[in-house]
Length: 288
Ligand SMILES: [Zn+2]
Image (cartoon, rainbow, N blue to C red; front, side, top):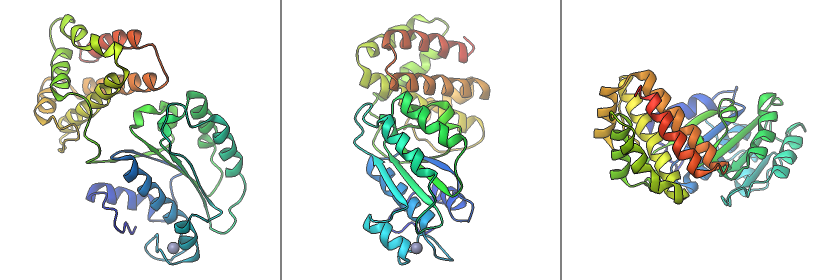
């Protein structure tokens, strides 16, 4: 893979090259994290790699497919979404993409669909997308960008390879709050956790940020527990504490619980019910 001016980092570059460097490409990939602009640039680069007809490293940038894709005029490359507003990615667009996917490519060997900021898809739109991901036509590649993969339905996530961009927008959640919540999850009583999370019920943005921050923190702790290293949350000490006091299974459940809550929030779940059940489920996942 030729990444040009994009520098996704050594580990991510290696994974992307393994997935998109050969002849058999994944049917769907999700690019999460980083900035919206970085996600978009990387998704377009992967789309060009999928269409490129060069023998060696792709995208070559000079073959007719690359030139047209760069100019935004390739008939086999379709880009949708991107405004990011809640539910602005309509189900009608997804249905039209689905029909398009069953029409053979015009010029390239494949068709590439870039779906920008897929967190703006309603559950209905995601379910429409799921239908084509479950039985994808040959030679079609879907590239989704999303602020956090947790905003996607688990069924959609399970059909795609997930790639996380690092070093993006700093997490908007208050690090001190995340740290306190992490400690309260493992505390003997439930009162502290309920107290800390109560203000999030009235502030959905803060709740979303807290869930994203907690997902990164639990992910960091799980990586440490599994013998890995590297922090995405910016809270390495809290991640280390969690990894020492909880089992791998507990950390993995905690991650699932916050991802599930984030997905439900993205689908406009009732915040009060969501926070209450979140507290109970976090405590249960931590074995408390
Ligand atoms: Zn090319």
